[in-house]
Length: 586
Image (cartoon, rainbow, N blue to C red; front, side, top):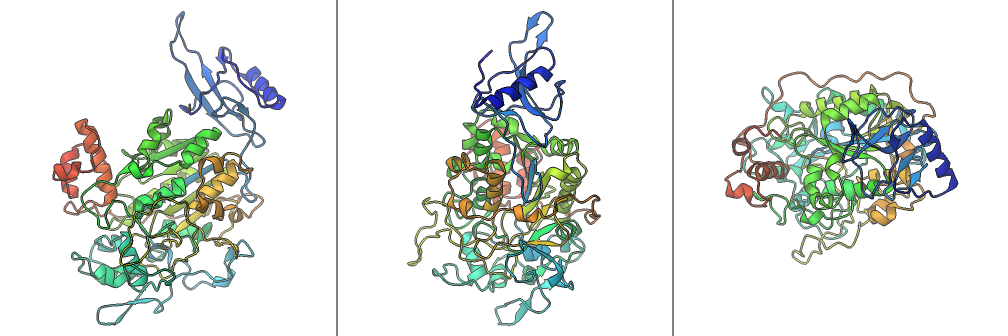
């Protein structure tokens, strides 16, 4: 049996104690770096420990050729025993977050909604001074939501259109506002915020360009809908969770750009200089390339410290597509990508990995990603499923659930993003100089997005804010929280993820105020009932859908993924995608 290297006598003693509790024929083997194939199985030992063991399987009198790694994931309050990537036994356990002992962090990231679009009216009519603002020395401004006849954009005639509560439309049209999809490339996001495509350095955003930018889309027939926001009764799940737990009303997208760059920030703390999904300033029928995202991610850090992780999704994982080149060099990476159904099972049993990242399970035919113009009720149902699985699970008290969105997607918001963002690195900017304007330096945030934090150690009606001298919350705050949680002495994290944005980002620890968890669950309503609006088959594919369809088509044909594969096969709409994919559902 290979030798196991112990860091100290304490580790050796713990290992010996665990071995005495093991069932017969269980032998411990050195875990090679990156080895992470694991699934839950009763090992016959005390199940309040984490330990990785290799079990020899016997078939009759013959010894099986291979050995399987089995992981028991039941957490002990005082210690966690696991073999890290160097094959060493480690007794380290995650640090507390605030007053809470957290063993699992779960992130659900949805698509393309601004804070005002979904939560702008959540505290309308309430006494905002009585909300629980944390930390206590945080920004003293009251909850920054919408107010009647206060925030506006002007139309081409100069007439004001005010931000309004409740979306409108015949039949099911009110659930898919805005329809069609707003523009979300970097230049158009500048237009929405500054009324200029190329704002000069130092210019403050006015947030007065949303209406004219949306009205400039040829397919738009009701441009006024860009100023409409969902009423709390329309999105009851997200609203109730934000009221019963914590909401951050100053959580900004990491950069004023599209999905792939912002999702890169939540995984890597940088977009590697990228500001658009594609290489050009406009969307085309090409597929976003993953060659730009061969950078270290949070998953590399988790592998290095021996912390378990899973990405849960539907047929295809966007995370897997975006960082395919990175995962191709990671041993057993495929075993970390799971179906969403397994998440619900593990959550209820209290056997989630340390870190879980959840993606929408459907992007195309019956999408539940909330990307405009998709029915918001479908994603509300997904949020409720995730919350129910976690809150009814055995590890509820020790699980932090974060619900957030990658970017605002062109939806209206009234708060100008600050120019205080820390540039993450020195990666070459994607944008070339335009009319004498320097390329984007990642020194300002994107538009606000909804972010809700859920755990029984959080007090109701909490509003999370930064401290006076801190940077704003953005997606890098998730990574900073994971750093302080899993590597409190910063011995490993800075060697893997060197982003300066993460280094400066505030963490979520302050939101865990209660020393003891709440004893009863608050009532969270179900998503609005009704038949969800399906995506129209004649609708052009958005960049995320193109990535999914291109992946499915390349796998179906048994060829390598080519950025022009959809163009060669004449795939531009949802109907075309259904034609070429056949029974593959995504």
